[in-house]
Length: 48
Image 1 (cartoon, rainbow, N blue to C red):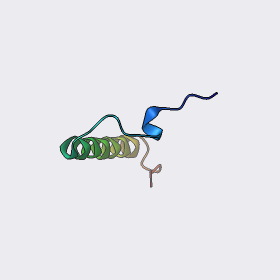
Image 2: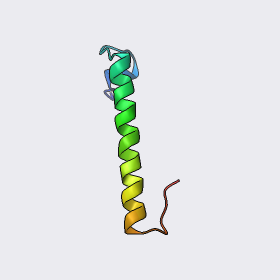
Image 3: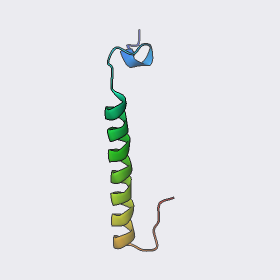
């Protein structure tokens, strides 16, 4: 029998709205940094 992660079926860990917003902002900032790095290393390569 396969074990599945408990978050698939129920939320047992709460996360605040502020924590969620901060995580999304951090992820967006990381994507921007990655795109900038790729553009600097090879201007012809672009991500979406």
